[in-house]
Length: 242
Length: 219
Image 1 (tube, rainbow over the protein chains, first blue to last red):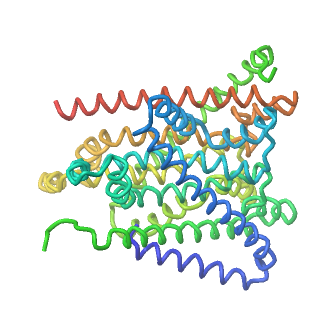
Image 2: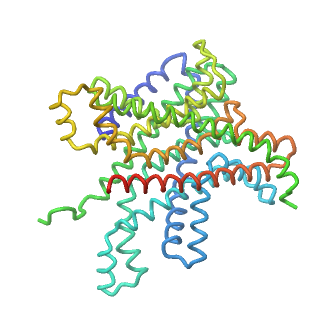
């Protein structure tokens, strides 16, 4: 969708939410749900940062590591891309304690989400690094840079711009995936909704609000990432030289 | 000993039976996603009257969590007098959710058809239906099959969500087995292994299909 339609939809979603919160029918639910949304946002934010770090590390290890490290990175990537997030979440939640590692549910949630997204992100990072024209490497060698210098100063900055759009998609997937953490008792937006639902049985009202809140956050994320993309590619020499 | 082989072997048969449900749900959901996705993509091309509402619908479904959509339908449909079992609701939700992703895949396929094909169809006085059926779709679909295959794997990995609407697929069965014996290590690890193996096998199969399709279009 075009940027204008996205903004239009966001305005519509926020408008609906604002209107609903003035209605008697929905008013009581709003504070509880917004409280849950705060947890959802916090988990999304922490897991996004960690996922990005995991992705960069795994991609670099896979591309330039020593053979055993390269192999380890591949195992990590294939394992977390090949299995379901819910299985990973339950594995960390139920199985890890039996190995003597009892983590708080919040830690498990953030860890599972970031490891999962990091594995998908590693492939994004790798693709972006490989998409930087090889002439950039050659030019770096020509000006006597070491490989590490070239990677850090020349290749990665260009790859970072290329990977913004796919990361936008991954962050939205991550946001949507946070709904799963309600199943390991994290009081996020979904958890609060299920709780309210079991108390009041006003299913349609509650879930309409919840869907609108998730929609609002998703669209905001999309707009932020589009803005970042625009800002990052400004001044980039593309096409005709003046 | 953390891993008990005897217990692992004991839980294997029920898990394999549950795996059949997982596979069944995957295939049914994919059938819905692939056909509904195509319908969405084609309808979207038929003019702004369809394009606007469909774009909003697609963006909405893509931007909200599958889990919430599943709960919503599971709890709300009965209030309208539609009582469906968990498997049906779950398969429908996954199907519709991934249909919006498949619609985007088909769209790229459709957009890559050269303009001349449409013009030739008009010149030959073909109707809209015939144009799509005999000219456009046979060229648009084969190139996007690998991308659709990736969503087949995506759907496969989404099926554990069915356990929240009381479907005894792999994950749900593993959790029940675990809670009966207080041993989660074996069941959940086996489920993870099953997913890993199936995903790797399907990914290899998709790459093979991709190679086959490329050979056909090049040669």
